[in-house]
Length: 78
Image 1 (cartoon, one colour):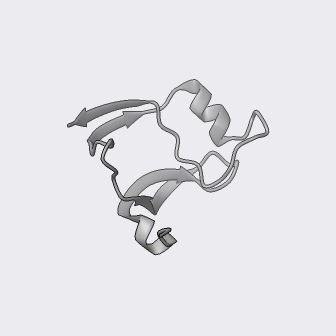
Image 2: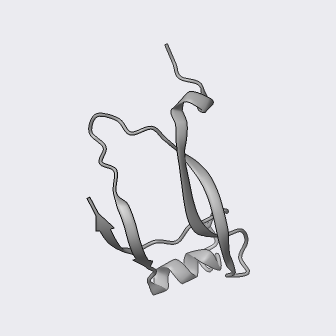
């Protein structure tokens, strides 16, 4: 039996997202699917972005999809 979207996407998450090509990041709440048998849950303490992320935020390559949460380097706790 296939899961409904409400059943599959149940983990609440938070990030800083670009909503358009302005380059401005704002708080963004979203839902993620539940962890499967082969998934690991991590706690991200800090996150950095690289120069390429800035190009994606501003849609410099012409293929960005919004909302867009840039991410590159993480400091995590397993």
